[in-house]
Each structure stands twice: as structure tokens, then as C-alpha cells.
Image 1 (cartoon, rainbow, N blue to C red):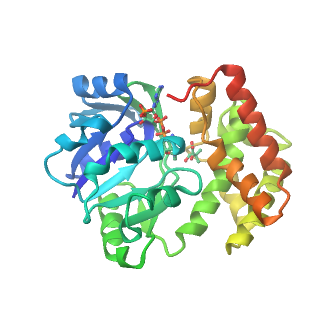
Image 2: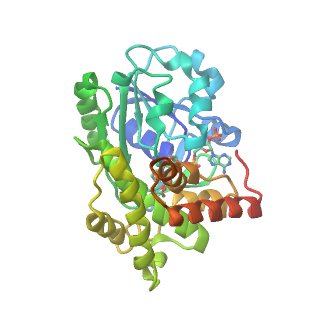
Length: 314
Ligand SMILES: NC(=O)C1=CN([C@@H]2O[C@H](COP(=O)(O)OP(=O)(O)OC[C@H]3O[C@@H](n4cnc5c(N)ncnc54)[C@H](OP(=O)(O)O)[C@@H]3O)[C@@H](O)[C@H]2O)C=CC1
Ligand SMILES: CC(C)(CO)C(=O)C(=O)O
């Protein structure tokens, strides 16, 4: 399959590498100059479970995508939530009536942004539990295992969605076709709405958070807020199952992971995706008349910390 990975930070690196190793024709698109130049010079590089890997792949700035000669079948998008619109404004030349877009980014509401650019029948949505971190431009740390769930947003995309599941699975990205991607997005938002915000505030990794005595109580309270708001969108979250799903990450092979929000805020002093996670639940709660004091406090604390560290947008 001809695939463009748009946003080649940590996760774009993981997916770009895996898909190219499985024989797909992969092109990269990213806007961070040191990253683009490092990949042009040394290829896409990573420490993959202890092994140094490297592969040369073409990479373009968003403003250069009109130089990509052949149309791509699929765009896999891994920008930050707040960059999505700006990227899609720039990569319009890549979007043809046959080009599908797969979004596995954390957070909620991305399909509303993407629908401004792409027909609903060309949109594939879902989640991933893979982890990744960039340690320097063009080089990622890729540890542990994960999975991917995807579904077509519009009714006509099912056949292609299943083809993408096959392509991702051949690339060892453990994909499965979901019949309830919106549920999975809310479930994953609970993971990020607890682990990402709390690890960023407490400056710890997931395993360390799980070992604190109080974590399990406030985790359940936060999940309950997500569930109360989700109900107004016809999603009935199984709170016990969601809690156990999060609890498993404290002991499994991703326990040492510092969530992407920690990497942004604490390590790199960059802005976070909080407004698309706890912030989105707080906003939706206001709309539906559901109190969400925990999500409000977490959102405000993360914003305060962004100000204290002088977080930058790029
Ligand atoms: N990391 C993880 O473990 C996981 C992340 N996700 C989600 O995937 C999406 C992508 O996340 P992730 O890959 O972590 O994002 P990264 O921050 O690694 O990369 C995203 C973009 O940010 C810019 N960028 C990255 N690092 C820097 C830096 N140090 N300085 C300046 N710009 C930088 C680049 O774009 P530009 O130059 O245009 O700004 C890059 O394309 C997010 O929605 C995230 O929540 C989902 C599951 C796990
Ligand atoms: C759940 C987790 C922590 C890893 O998949 C993640 O999504 C992130 O780091 O943002």
C-alpha cells in the first residue's frame, strides 16, 4: 500500500518504520525542521526493544507535499491534536477522492476536524495502545507491545478499513477491526485522562503512579466523570473494565512508559493535548449539565504547569 505518515514524532516514527519494513511504500511528512533534516541525513532511526534500527525514507515538509508525485492510498496521521487543523490546511494536495485517512491520535473530537477536509467515507478512526518517545530528532525509543483498533467512520469505508487492518497486522502492529470505535475512543480517553494528566503533574511513569496508595481511588473518580458525560453521547462505559484496563498498564511491559503528555510538558516544555482529553470532558459536561470537578481541576492544573514551565506550541 502507498502510505503517507503525517506527523513523524514518536508514534509516526513507530508506524512509519513498521509499515515500511512490511513492504509498504511509505512517505513521511513532518514540520519540525531538526527532525526532517535528521531523517533526510540518517534515515528514520529508533531503538526498537533494544535493537538499533534505521531505514531511509523520503520525508517532506507539509508545504512540500505537492512534490509527492504519486497519490497515496492512505494517510496515517500522528500530529498533536492542536496541530491537526494546521497540518490538514497544508497537506490538501495529498487528499484525493481515493485517499483514506486513519487517525489513531489520543483525545476526542478529531473526526469533527478531519471531516472538514475529508469525506466521511474516507475516514478511519480508532485507538492504539502502542507507546513511543523521541529522544532526539529522527530517533525514537520504541519499547513494549501494543495494539490497534480501527473502524470506518462512514458506511462505505468498511472494505478499505479491513484492508488497513490486514496491512497493519502484517506490519506487526496487532490491528483488529472494531465495531465500536467510538466506545474505544472514550475508553482510551479514560486511559489518557488519568495516566497522562496525573503522570505529568506528579512527574512519574505509569508504573510509579500505580504504586501510590491513593491512585486507585482517584482513578475511579475520574473514570466515573468520563462515564457520566459519555452517557450523554450514547456511550455506556463499563467503568470496572476500564479501571482494570488502566490498572494492567501499571504492571505490564509498558509500565516504565512516561505518557506522551509527560514527554511534552515535563521533558520538552511543550504545550499539551489536555483540552482534547480532560478538557473535552469538562466542556462536554458543561454542555450536558454534568458536573466534572476532577476533569476541570486536572485541566486547569496542567494549564498552570504549561505556564510555569513556559511551554511552547512548537
Ligand atoms: N507517544 C506515545 O506513546 C503515544 C502517543 N499517542 C498520540 O499520538 C499523537 C502523536 O504523539 P507523539 O508521536 O507522541 O508526538 P510527538 O510530540 O513525538 O510528535 C508530534 C509532532 O510534534 C512535533 N515535535 C515533536 N517533538 C518536538 C520537539 N521536541 N520540539 C518541537 N516539535 C516537536 C513534530 O511536528 P511539528 O514540527 O509540525 O510541530 C511532530 O510531528 C498524539 O495525539 C498522542 O497523544 C498515542 C499513543 C501513544
Ligand atoms: C496510554 C499511553 C500512555 C500509551 O499508549 C498513551 O496513550 C500516551 O503515552 O499518550
